[in-house]
Image (cartoon, rainbow, N blue to C red; front, side, top):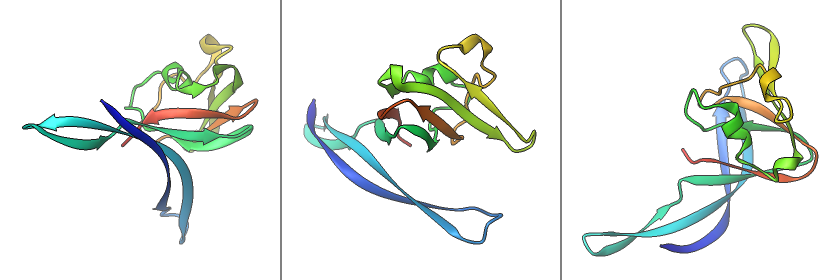
Amino acid sequence: MLCRTHNQQEMTSMHVPSVPRTIRTAAAATVALTAVALNGVAVAQPAQTESVELFRGCNNVTLTWPTGTNTSDVAAGVAPAAALQSIWRFDNAAQRFSGFSPQFPAQSDYRSVSRIDAVFICMAGPGTLTRPRI
């Protein structure tokens, strides 16, 4: 049973081993709380997804889908679908980008994702990415 939905601002930080500094990012997340009954007591639990605001242009985003998820499934999490232009991932070992285009999925070379992939989601206009919460 859905109790309420609210927005929260969450701060995350990560340490990049090759760079001696901490990088902080802010992401607006939509959190839905659900009520479940455990031994007759209602307990609020967070939803299993979160929303990330996307802007026109390319947005640096971390993917939270399980390793092996098709990139087309990630693309299905973008709304509005018509605004999605492409998803790009840099392969540091190969020193090249691989990409996915919803207009040309068969020609795309970025076919499946790994959990915590850092990608660029390029948009023709503003939108939202709904991704699994980890």
